[in-house]
Image (cartoon, rainbow, N blue to C red):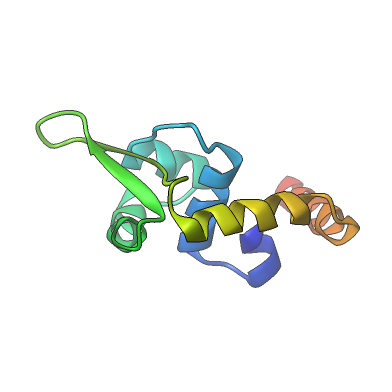
Length: 105
């Protein structure tokens, strides 16, 4: 939704995906698949999202990490509230409808 509203950005695509799935743990490859981007592109932006505490990074193997939305972060809490309010507006419903119809083309 934010990506549709503010323009294309991998950061926004990732945040959008996690805002829609706030309880989900995902590795880089899964994130890349869900946002339809190259895993290399995703791996370049993840450190900033983790450094800003928007996402939590959890080590699950020798070299593997999973990520999830950091719901304890005050900014993320505000974004989540804003996100829920935006989803209820007619403007966002219209943007979403246009976005979905463009994907079908």
